[in-house]
Length: 397
Image 1: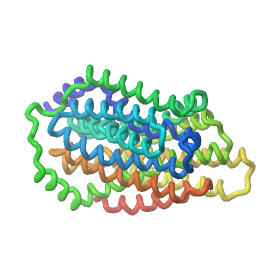
Image 2 (image 1 turned 45 degrees about the vertical axis):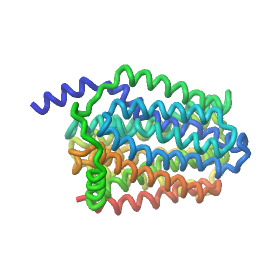
Image 3 (image 1 turned 90 degrees about the horizontal axis):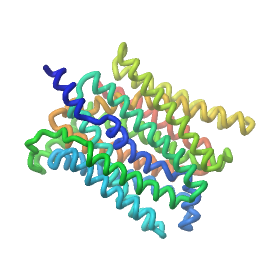
Image 4 (image 1 turned 180 degrees about the horizontal axis):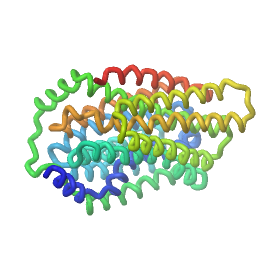
């Protein structure tokens, strides 16, 4: 009976729409990274200050996923999604017309706050409708989209930015947001039960306290934050590494997104295949070890006196291996993080997302502080994060 119900509910979900909805926030984060140096020149600020738009984005994203995750339990998944996308469009428009860096910071905050509904509400919809290995496998597809979307962002942004300028990148985001809103309004079904609960601050605080004292949930939240922190720290540092150190053009750098996409999709595929014979925890451990091998490869490559082409090849191979490992570990973390809170998945998802996106914001902020233009910074930073992830995994029983 339960299996039939799962099948019935899954038919009500347009999976292609959900993949687009979960992916567009990350596209918005990375699509203009190839233009960071041009943005710094356009707003007449140092590059480090332009990089702060990434940290601001994730800070607002953390607040947003908390807000939308809770509110979706009270106004429904569909309304939470559509209202959030509308706010996102406003933020994109303000990015387009901004002429000072302070205005751009505010616009990015609004943009990220609205976009965050795509992440948390989509995951909540999936948790509403699927269970067990079916949920693990769907989260594998969603994680592939989460990995692929920030990877394809630089590809699109590099081409648009090089030939039409960074303002055209912001215009592209406005148009993309409007198309998504129309699609969502027409085809996104409501998955929340008909009798929506009233907001209860007492219930929210009780769930918060329970989550913070649940070592299992805390460990997975930290792991998700660490893995995403590495992924987006790469997107923060990569423009300088490949454009400044390896002399890529914006459009050439954009094609590095293909490497990132292939690596993370391969990792997710290996994870799905491994679930047939191994536990999720074992696959996560393997993924972290693979990522450490990749970061070590990058460190060795950066340390040796090699020709520019040999150093570039070794560095790309290291990045690829590191992100394959992230792709193996992350889907299982997302799938298992809230198994102890299945009855309050919306509110619990809000707190979980708030926590790990704050970690992502801190990661991009720290990598910005550590930024020296050296190709050694990213692998050293990633190695420390991965070693800490191994320690966190030991908390999971």
